[in-house]
Length: 434
Ligand code: NCD
Ligand code: ZN
View: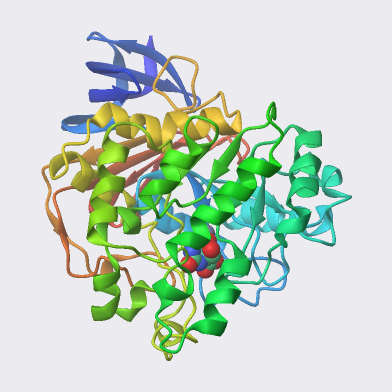
């Protein structure tokens, strides 16, 4: 049989690595063999690692039907940046100008995403004081729910006294739940008492630990839903969570410290960057498999906004474009096993969300693949980014590798089979298999 496409190289699955040929037909993986498969089109990726398409559980693509924040990012630019970073599915956060807290808003966002996005965009439903009794009405449209326990970009958060009710409301939908754990009360108390206000002191480690304790107390002992603690910044949080909840870490919390923020104010982020000792402990925990997801928390703000006086500047850094470069750094410089990357960047997020058609390289799964060349050093430069905000926290840093090809089973568009993005050709050369 002549297949649509064959990819040859080292496939990295959650628990195994094999040198094989993968056959792709109609956007799905149809055969995996040592050799002997035939097709008209072939990608030879012998010097690369072929991962299941990366799934980013946590990104802020900014667009909604108000279009007020399209100047920061939109579905088109955000998903191009995602492809550049090797990400083939992205889950968009609800803290936009019209917070995503009703079915009506969600449907409008979905339509925009369907027409503009170049990869699958799925959505969180936000939980706020005003929709706590009606979140079930959104459940068909959302992949999961998001709760913020502190003020951050967009101002969508709930007070801790409604947390048990909010968790119970999500439990009734049986959908997974992601919680931003910083305790607003701790932040406010510190704000009153501090004379010199450094960001990391305004949002201290204690705020994260306190919020996680409140989630532990609020989630009933036998909660049936999956709960993910967003962007863990404090090593001790992992001990608190134990095996009770899932958790995420971001590239910036594994790479930078609060000292770096002194040199580069653009690194202001929520939760803040911490000490070097804490970073090393987080990285060690990541390597030992204690952290479930490597997420971008891609939070684009313009350079002008980030250049404001420190306390007024918005928090957040863009991370989609450089995700693959960062993964290469983890593998080459930190000795992270590629199979662990397949878990934290693809398999675990797919299982968390119940996306059983992706997350590993197997016959019958969608042909979403991220092909990473770990022997291709690149210096990060804002000119090469697809994010609309055109800057990176990693500007000027050299990483040991880069995404070379991304294959996407683009089943959203009628009759489209799959697309191959070639990074050497700046995403422009999009090869369609039809
Ligand atoms: C995020 C944003 O800008 O939307 N900012 C950030 O510093 N991480 C919001 C968030 O995830 O808290
Ligand atoms: Zn975020």
